[in-house]
Image (cartoon, rainbow, N blue to C red; front, side, top):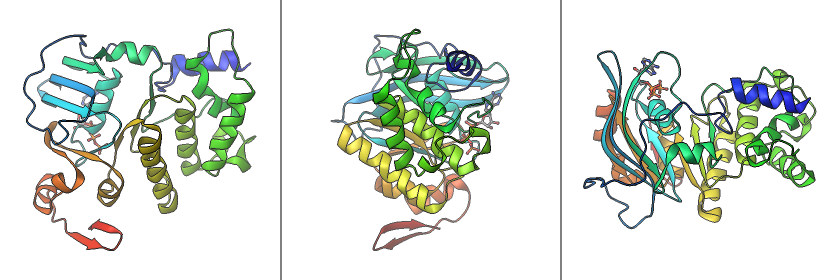
Length: 298
Ligand SMILES: Nc1ncnc2c1ncn2[C@@H]1O[C@H](COP(=O)(O)OP(=O)(O)OP(=O)(O)O)[C@@H](O)[C@H]1O
């Protein structure tokens, strides 16, 4: 039963866990990246290198990035106004453009390897903005989908996987719903479950597009603290799209500010998130207040 559900999920679903990615923009193993001027992290090792990225639809340019290097073992936030290109950037990395055909060109490598190979081998976990919950799965079954990229076709999740899933469900306050059907969950519960599924994949690289969507403030803080801890205690590399500027400043190590499909600034939150720069990018006056808990952006 679970077998056919898994097949159907991964053939039709958007999960990057095992989905065969649409070919990403051309990736290459070698190549001479040009000089990067946005290098507040010159000594950090490199997670992603993107060069000469140009994504367009008709005359509209969705993304134009000459050079972007994302460091590894950091929690990196992509921020910027609606339509800035944040999701397009992550989908480009994942090779997962949906909908109408986009014209894509450029070079992406992940730790020196073609990104499509990393994806194919299940080395990148991903939660998008529109995860699917149509399958008649229980919460536990859904969480266990996360390990399927690590299993051969004839293998089933084992006791260890189930124990780990139950621990994560407990961490994300879903253990009272273990046997519930996923369709019955609230928006925030579904979001937490999608994150649990990605964490079950146990990859070194994770990407989350607006992971705090639908979460209340307590769960938002818990999640971002959890991701921060994964990076700093387990040396994961995590990329997130965030809209909450206070959270981006407080929890992340590096921020990439996008606007109009271009990288406006990259660096530590303090370097990038100046009042002037944010107000210009979001086209509204944004004030930053220092509090005993850190900066608050309003
Ligand atoms: N498949 C597509 N075909 C045509 N245009 C697209 C496609 N995908 C995205 N776009 C356009 O590209 C621009 C960037 O979209 P994207 O989803 O990357 O923005 P975003 O920064 O993630 O925005 P938001 O904060 O609203 O989620 C938008 O103007 C959007 O309409």
